[in-house]
Length: 554
Ligand code: FAD
Image (tube, rainbow, N blue to C red; front, side, top):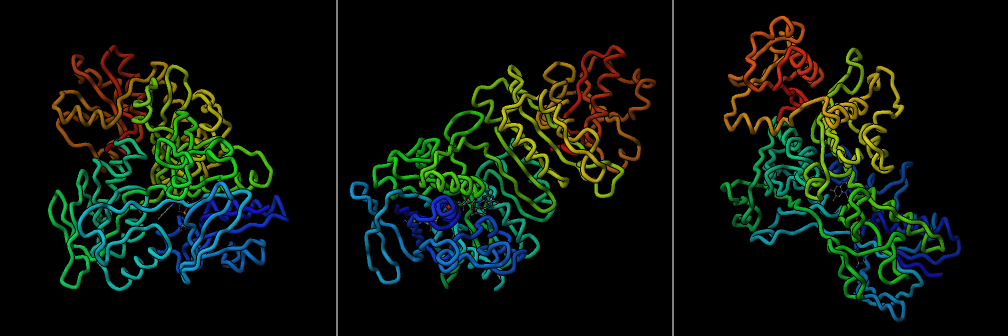
């Protein structure tokens, strides 16, 4: 049996390796137009910044063996043709025409099963100057090497176009080596991953590290100097000098081969595949960044180009091209990244997405220490849970902060994958010892907060909504119930802030007017909620607390 795979980074090599394990006799060939194979594209930002010293580390096994063509041939009995481009698929004769890019020689490679793992390519902006020397995208290892070289050779003023995952990872990794400016067309960074009140917290961290952020700003052109190298970007906010520009404005699936072969594309523009990752031709499979996925919550097609997904696709394809029948259920759009000291994770639907899709959305933002507050190293995390209040099913989670986000994110991935309700989540038997968690894990706490809100027990306001109401001049009272020490350390500005520590609230409640809306708060939000219940027990009728406390104030 001849298995031919086009694309040699994540989905392709994974499919090849799995196919070999399932079928020792198959003839397996990978065609890759680039020179590097099976490398960790996700590691490129860390290579550019120097955390990963040598590019070879990105293409080595955990014990340091380089995954090159010789490795694939000797260890896995897989033939790899690098520097070779697949030009066209002849479905009738089951061959693929390929060109050796070094010699220009063409040949036709036969297949019984064909795998398209052609991935994606970075969007190149259609603006003047995008092809000047010193303007890069970050789509492959060659580009990563060029960017690193430019920084090592003294590029100081780095402009990143795009405040998405890749743009922010680059800012993080180059932040101590260069002056970074990010231009983002949308009103917030990470706008396709997070709700705005959480994006704002990421923006605060970036600005705190000296990154210049220009939001709601379009780059109109890039201008060069007399030598033809980049000199500045011209944007809707003015002109900014630049020694190096990286366009990180998203990626597009590489579908030309599939399209020309008459294979069906989906509504996202990526290749459409069934649950077995077969294209509209049952002998042609496709996976990784070139295909669209089904969203596990909404059931809708989505384009989620992630290395994690590409590898899972590869395994399923490797099974199926060797006679197996594995299915790939879909994705949650899970992502995690680090921006300086902040870790940002998300899975499922954001509140904005869920509202657009018509769910009865209820959400809660909860701040909590990631481990026992008395244990050294305890740091806060902020969890936003989104659920459908009519079914109580969870729809999504966004988790961020300097604390241990990673563990909670994966708990949420498991919960969402199993379609659990917020009540079931609250009952998870999560691990606890002081170095790792709190007796009620932040996830349990967040689930309980959301249950209280759905059940009408807790009346709370989203912090961004509150901020907007305050900016609009609404005369509500912001009641700070923290301790005097906390109040002296950091406080919210404005004349509507009244400070009464929680322990004094019962005796001093008479100082508060009964005819004005009162919004209580504390550092995290537990005392804010307690203050609400105290005031209500004393007959106040228009009291709420804002979610997430000072820690999550946008
Ligand atoms: P690709 O990696 O795009 O590889 C496709 C290969 O096919 C390419 O090498 C291309 O040359 C080859 N090819 C295409 N057409 C042809 C042809 N006609 N003939 C021959 N060869 C062809 N994902 C995560 O999950 N987590 C992360 O932290 C993360 N970080 C990232 C950081 C950066 C900077 C980037 C760029 C991506 C990141 N990703 C991350 C995404 C991840 O790298 C991709 O999802 C993954 O590489 C997709 O793998 P793939 O095999 O589908 O496609």
